[in-house]
Image 1 (cartoon, rainbow, N blue to C red):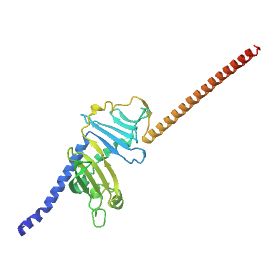
Image 2 (image 1 turned 180 degrees about the vertical axis):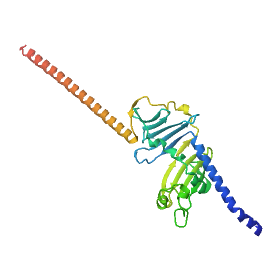
Image 3 (image 1 turned 120 degrees about the vertical axis):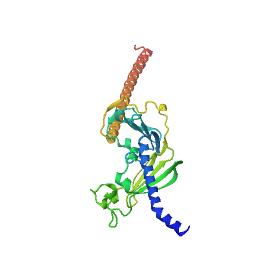
Image 4 (image 1 turned 90 degrees about the horizontal axis):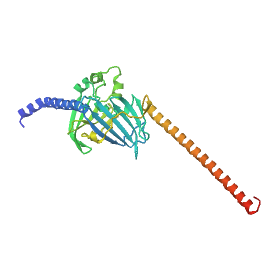
Length: 298
């Protein structure tokens, strides 16, 4: 490479970098829009839910209707069977106990929107001013693209711009935002569909703030194989405010059912006792009669 060629290369290098960054930003923006209209079934093994320690698998159903309505159903499985489900359809939100089929209507089942958090895009300032890098990779044996979106490390320090220049949020101080706001976002995009597969967020110190992924995802579900999946439950017991109240109601109903079962068993036991007493009395009377007949005293 001649001196002239080197000069031209280094002259246009910043323009090539800007072009690459703009391309990655455009790809990411398109992925957000594509993901909003995507239908899929995602299976997440060992989800490690803080509020549900015994859940071994979560199956997340997302169906987007022709008019844009999003139907959601999340099934929570233990080691052997389905425990409960959350459902969102045109009629509202429901929590369903799998053991009884009983449902409660509500409006604050946050786990329904667990994977919907992938669609919460950063603000416009951050999108336009962040630094971008990308590479090809695979995830769950799916070819995909990894895009990293980063706020400069010096943001919020004495030598750098304020964090609010990227977040548009100035109510909290720079030190607080460096600790709580995502400085780095790592995205995985599916090559085939362009859908967001995974998102990990880190603060300025490199600590993980959150991580969400689709697990094993099927982007071509045949909904006809699952009739009634999003239907409003027929057995609705009442209303609950949130998932915690739903769990309390289920526990109360199971306790009440156990008490009723115990009472039934006790009643059956008393009936058997009475029957045995009657049989015993009858046998005793028969023995007395037989003895008297033999002795000629009858």
